[in-house]
Length: 342
Ligand code: NAD
Image (tube, rainbow, N blue to C red; front, side, top):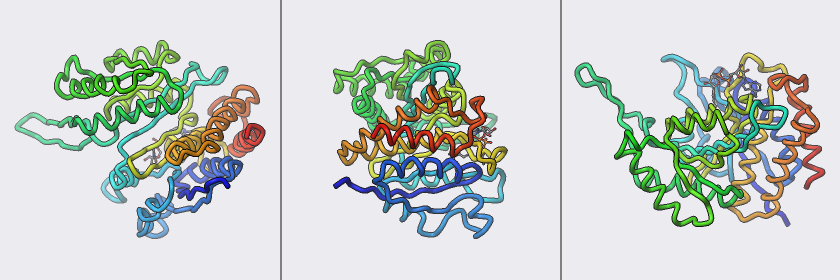
């Protein structure tokens, strides 16, 4: 009998409930998920005065994985601090996995690349200060943090059939901090002789991504560079609505579309659900690997094909991609294609 998985689904704000409902429709086809909805975010805050329920983290920790929609963070001193940052820190989600594909006839560029971003260190450690007329920000690069993110990238490449991992850095200028990251990368690369390894200075990486994105496969990098390059990848794909992401730690993992709450199009049923469905696919890949589940591994591959067929062959496209399909039209088409492939 197939193993079943307990998933927490946080619908989130704005277009979140629409795109996560679409992802749920597709997950239902796979047939192995018990889904528990947990409310959080702006709408929940406006109703209850709290950004999330008291047992929020316990419920996330009790699940096999979490799939979430975007959560709005109000700007300014009133309101609450980012729930996304709270989740990441509380669950120690050190790896930010951002695969992005550009599709034939849909995206300005055709490519399939994965950015693996270190999620806890670098310039985002939040250590800043002012000394006389100088403002300082401290960049933290540790051997431990570098090792675990670089090993994560090689393991991801190995498990998902990628042939090359590229380290992105600025070690020519930051000889000690980025230099340590690059040194650790070269050491760990030796443990994976079947996977090619090379490195790019971050400015050259941006140039290469814009010029020849099809040549890149898995990129592993520090927090700030990964933040910027992964938005560049979504831009090359043609819409924020196309890329999903995973935030993964030793014990827990949370998957989400890369876009925000899209308040300008919320409630109209026209948001592109592909990013949320890709997030669900990444969750399936993660669970398949963690639990050595061949059915789920096959289903994740089939879902990738079903998404591609829906966009490229069937051309069921939401307005951000120039079409006039509704969110649920895309989900239904992907569900139908997936059912044929399973
Ligand atoms: P956004 O991603 O919500 O919107 C930017 C533009 O992209 C908008 O025009 C929007 O309509 C469009 N867009 C986004 N997703 C789309 C989709 N699936 N289909 C079609 N079009 C889509 O970015 P923003 O306006 O800067 O942020 C809005 C809110 O979302 C903010 O409160 C922010 O804090 C939050 N946010 C949350 C997350 C998260 O939870 N991980 C990430 C980013 C932003």
